[in-house]
Image (cartoon, rainbow, N blue to C red; front, side, top):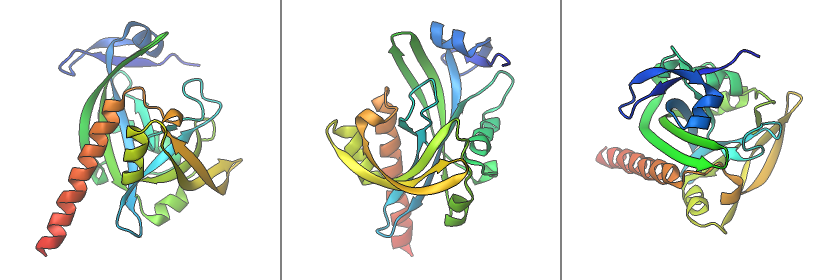
Length: 217
């Protein structure tokens, strides 16, 4: 397997060199990632986010719930090229111009043998039912996809003992199996809670703006 090299950055997000992915997380170098959140609106008009359940085969955070798709920015790659992760993990070919930029968020946390300092470039995409049907998961990476409303996700993030049911599907040998799961904070990749607090705040602002536009008409 070819070694993966990441672009390492200074505090102003300027690329200052390259390092192997393992060394970056060993030394805690700042680097850049691409975060993709698919969303739609349910019958009650609530924004729902599409959560990925990571494969149980994953070395990092197996079976945990995470953003729809994500990946590290390789050395000599642009942020736009991070869109390849959506094609690889979900099987969807999307146009960069259709994505909505949400925020660039600096995530910083430390585990026993893992230091993560990353500038997360976060983008949204309004997924149509047809696109959802067209998803084909990379099974060694992704176990399944599940919708969670913003109000319920807010409770999960803010209350460690709160649990909610999420609906979607898991994929086995290419077959989609409709599935319900229980989501709670302990089952999420949430080592940096402030990231989710900012995500939720910005999504609430987005909904408020959209409702304001509708009321004007």
